[in-house]
Length: 127
Image (cartoon, rainbow, N blue to C red):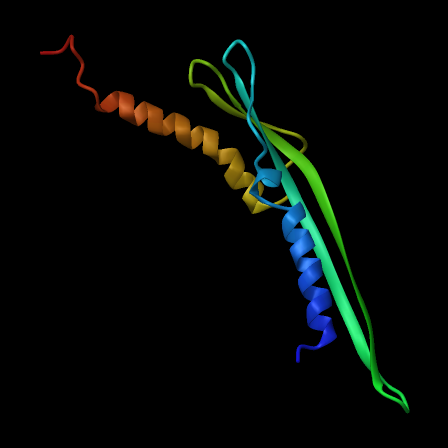
């Protein structure tokens, strides 16, 4: 028989999983009539605590327990893709972690890859 704390923890973690998924971090793209697409990027933090105790009594053993969780969703940036293929990362505030630095580097990497691809094509004017 499973201990009651396992049930409390299982339900709490399942509820957190329902609230926080990949679409919470990388939001749904928003397109403008001019062809610009904006993708919101958020930072998700959550905490979880659970505890309980078996309470022996004269009649039977009883369990008392509880759990709690907190979730914070903070918008940190927008990825802007223009109709000409230009990609920019527009940050909201400064970088606070290495992961945010990596996210910041993605548009530059895409531009470098585009440049490499263009330079691989043979020049029609040269013989």
